[in-house]
Image (spheres, rainbow, N blue to C red):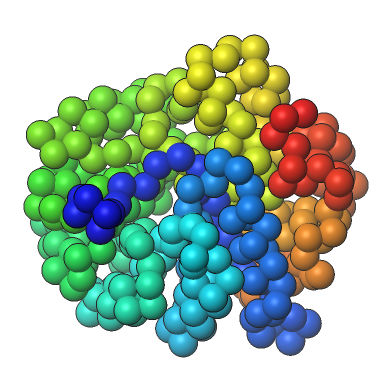
Length: 320
């Protein structure tokens, strides 16, 4: 809860942090804490998201996720809000993760739908409603629902999304990755107009300028693990109505996105880690299998150059 007693509602720029690994693929705790400190120190960053896709949560045990939260609170818990991912196939395990996040000091949950629901779960929308309701009953932490693209099989229809929002009073926001501009705008207009408004946060990095122009109230994105300062500058430029600055910063964001999210898309965590190695912010770019390291450093270097990212400017170039 906020000092006024109202639930915390995430807004602004919220990087989803990476998880560094050592050569033996164990967690590199020192590198992780330095990464957290880098991001928490970027002006305009309002919170950090841990144990999400960027952190390769699919490959982290419960104990490792708990350790990640402990390390996060130790490194930056007195400086910024922490949003903790809930990623699991089981409703009971989701409730356990939620209680772990609450007990560990997190301010909010980022709730992924169980992957098992990709098998036409939307044909039974009550499954999504029941899942998020059970998660909301586990703790009083505010919840951000992760909305996926339709091709994943995990996208909630707008009708189901509204039903979940109405059924779960602690659901305060969605992280929208619907991947359709028209639907994204409809989500924003509909959820912001509910009797109990639910904020829409964007993760549409490939068209971030358009998403912010539609009224998204913040950004939760793995790209923020490298370009948090550019995201902050772009978000603030929109708040200020500074069109020229939006275009200038947006061009740099666009270049960074080409570095991270080109085909094959599955390599995006590996690319971000490789970028931070080249920029002197991580000691190694290891990812856990089945993911693999990238083998195209020249292409990555080209786009980082286009984005104006160097060891001297990374995390500090918002005013360039």
